[in-house]
Structures are given as structure tokens and as C-alpha cells.
Length: 150
Length: 229
Image 1 (tube, rainbow over the protein chains, first blue to last red):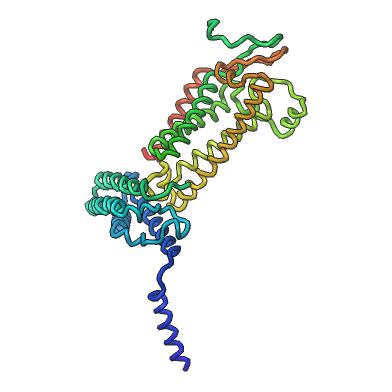
Image 2 (tube, each protein chain N blue to C red):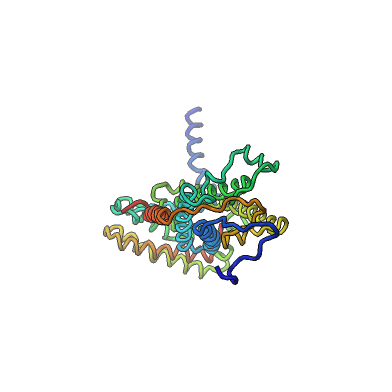
């Protein structure tokens, strides 16, 4: 019954992502890639703010990525994905001081929509101000919850 | 120069001659200061200051290279940089002292300048992992390329530190073993040589100095503005 076998194989293949829960190391890797994407979007915004004729399409696209990333950051930090699980700059304080961590995240999610709004309004000075403000939110969280690079 | 200001008396039979002109000395010590500031601002995360410190270093290094081409006799590369044979000859003792760098020290000067150029250039394109802090020219490269530049900006600094350590050890050896205070010479510009003493430094004109300062400032200014005027 080659056809039945083929169908079963498809069903099994589709089920794999469902039944397979991410391991802590996989979560760390995905988290790292996610925040790298955010860094890339941030640079793209910054690049547009340092040119005389900003490309608002690029600006909008990246402001959206930034705004998206500011929502529910908690999902990237399930328990057990700290330094105990593998190489990460995520500090244990993320899990030992959850209220502070949430407040730091909120600073980001409060400010990110302002960048998006300024990008939509094609207001370059607003984008610059929002970008600077947002950078402060990033730094605020990194100072307390991310280990230094070395 | 008054007695109070004058350097300690020369050894027996040695003549004190002027070796370094003021622009060379000022550039040298400002580079020392700015490398220290750059190091500290990077370690403590003061990136705004780090950029300004780096820009100042860029201007200083441009000026030093310019001065190495058209400056005073002891600052000019053509006056002290020797090939492998010259260095070997010096090591064998077959070298008549001239004022300024010896052929071995010349290698150190060139290596330090090359590393400074590399380090500053990498910094201009570097991007931090968050895309928040970056060098002024990073808008011309991708995020990935900026990260690679940042990585090498970090690696090259360690090489630079190693070379600075070697430079300090070599100078300390002169000061404590050979009893020749090269540090003081780089401060007041004079050094004692046994007779017959070499010819003193031939200074360059004030006009050349001004042109150099203008060139260094203009290039640095253009870089900080990412060549957008």
C-alpha cells in the first residue's frame, strides 16, 4: 500500500512540530536569532535617520518589526532557559526578579508604538526622538538583565 | 630655557641634542591619552564619548602619517624606516646612531600606526548587537558586516594592547638597563648622545604644520558626518 504509507508519512511529518517541544537550548538559539533580527531592524531605522532622504517604506517595515518584538517578550524567556541551560547572556535576575523584568519590558512596549506612529506619519524628527527614547528602553533592560559581552 | 626647566646634566662627553619637534611629541602623548580614554569608555559602555575619543584619534593618526611624509626629519618615515637588511645590520651592531628611532624601534612605530589605522577603521563601521550604537560609517554596510567589524574591533584591540606592552617594555629597558631616559626625551625633546653626536632634528615649517592640522581636521570632520555635506 504505497499510497497509505505515503499519507501516513505526511501525517507524521506534520505532527512532528506539534509534539516536539523546544528544548531549552533550542529556545535560547531561537531567542538569540529573534533579538539579532531586532538589532538588525534597529540598525535599519538608525541608518534611515542618518540620511538626508529617508526611505519611509524601509523605515515603516523595520519599525513594524521593532513594534512586533516589543509585544509579549516574556514568551522568549520560559523558565529553565537561563545560564543553567547553556551559553546565554540572559541573567538569572530575569527569573528571580520577574516584576522588575516585566517593568523593563513594559518600557519597551510603551515606547515602540511611538516609533511606529512617527514612521507612519513620515515624521523624521519624531522617528529620531522615538528611536533615542527606545534605545534607552533597550539599554535599561540590558543593564539589569543581560550579562556583559565578555 | 631656564635652569629650572632644563633637563638633568648630560653624561661625561655626551652632547645633548634636540631629537623630537613639538608636533611629534604632542601627537605622541595625545595618542597615549586618547587610547586610554577609548579603552575606558568602551569598557564602561560610554559609547558617545568613545566615538568622540575615536574621532580625535583618527585626526591624530592622520596627522602623524602626514608628519611622517612631510614633517620634521626624525618624524619622517623615510628618515628612520629601514628594510630587513637595515634591521639585521643594526642588531649586529653595525649602525651609526642618528637622532630619533633606530631601525628596530622603527618597526614598532610602523606596527603601532598600522594597528591604530586598522582599529579606528573597524570602529567606524562597527555595529553593536542591538543596532543601537554604531560607528559613523556603519550605514554603508549591512548589520552582519557591522557585527564582523565590531568583532575585529575587539580582537585588534588586544593585539594593539600587546604591542603597546612590548613598546613600554622596550622603553623601560632603555631607561633602567641602558640608563637612557627615552620617556623624558619624548617629553622635552632632547637626548644625550656620546660624541660624535648625530645631527639634531630638522624641524618642518609652521606652514606645513598648519596644512597638516587642516587636512587631519577636514578628513575627520567628513568621516564623522559620514561624508554627507
